[in-house]
Length: 206
Image (cartoon, rainbow, N blue to C red):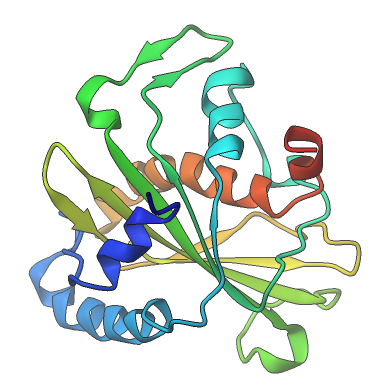
């Protein structure tokens, strides 16, 4: 059985747009999707299963709130790679446990890109940035028989110690009224990906 079933699926089908992308933005979204699909369908793309990390994040740790400073030593193993995990069936939290049920059937995956500061063109990048991480989310919902993504580009400035300099910023296509929902929806998935490339990963999976 494949350890990266979502990536396998993305190499044979085109994912759908998330529901919150308005019609006038669909063409821009499609152009972005096409660029990412070229990366995803590269047979040389390094790919990893991070089920153990996701299990710890959702079902072992009861920590409710994580901030970007909670993931020390952000150090992706490659300049571009893929990571995915099964969706959680249960979420353990200091505020109580939640059973996800059938909505927990599926997978979430990230295309993660890392570039040196001198190779990145952009505004507002902190002076002490050593690398910039960019993350793109894709999700397959088995109950809906739907694969969706990308959801927008998360960017994170990282210093020479591997610490995030500021909060991640998200560039996407949603209307402002959906912005908070989108940040919360993607936040947990992003935390799992960051945990997988941080120093915490060696503690969770020694």
